[in-house]
Image (cartoon, rainbow, N blue to C red; front, side, top):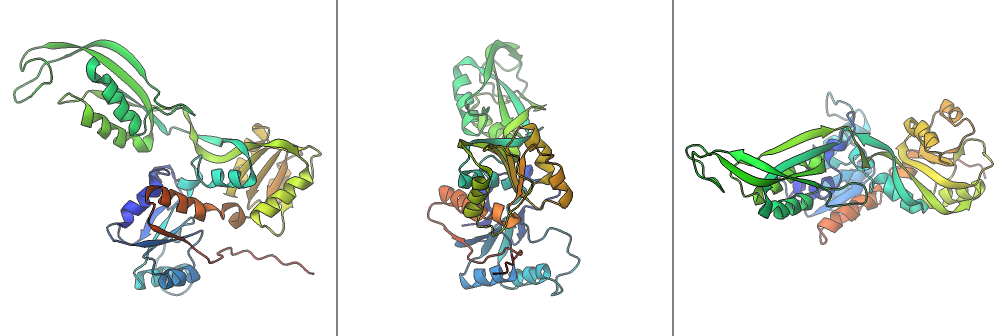
Length: 367
């Protein structure tokens, strides 16, 4: 299996174009044309993970966190990143990262965390703007159904939980074929009028090229007339964080016990108890302090995330319980998520989950 095709099993769901501007997701070391027969999945790339890949004969490592995040001025042995890069190159191991592109989809990192915590009806907490396009295409009545279906199958027409969404307007199209043309209807050199349907549908930015290609393949016209418009609409399945609900009200102490049990975090940092029972829960795997006000605006009873600073806890202002459950702990299930995406697309491929605990944080308890 070529590396580029293996990575596509993930990027078809979490396209690299939806990663944050500061991020470095994608293939970081290696050639996409290289063939590999097994992949190692991890949260972080460390020297121990490189050693594990060598021992398990994995030609590719896919991590959640990018190994190369800041600029490298040299590849030596001065720090863990340089040593890991050097070891990967020396042993012909490719390295890729699937970071905020997996964070920013509904069924991504936060969707997995929501499922682990038992949250129902999960929705994106902070939906993304400017990630949608509208495509309008004109075609004869008889072929309109075929064109619509091709666009839907390529990923167009999804609005929330609805699919196959479009609007169709009848009208008259006019055209005249010049020398060398082969018009589907009408004659070369003669002005022609044709009863046509204008099909309008919505599509995520990263699927525009795919949808246009599918549309052109089945469209009967030699030259297809279509328009693409940018939209400011929010995309309900793209964005940061997530919010969901428990089926029943939960006491605050029981809620903290649940988090500790499900995530395996030895200690939890949290704000003062609010005295409310927990039901509506906002979450963000990894560093999510930037979403605290979104959680408050969504009237969440609690917000679970990581990497909160001292003053971030004051921002809760008694309105909700804020819990710092650990960066690694809230993202640890991403390994299984990547394995599921690969196995769904390529069932028989050896997607191995790393056995190395890459959590850099240790907890001390005086017993």
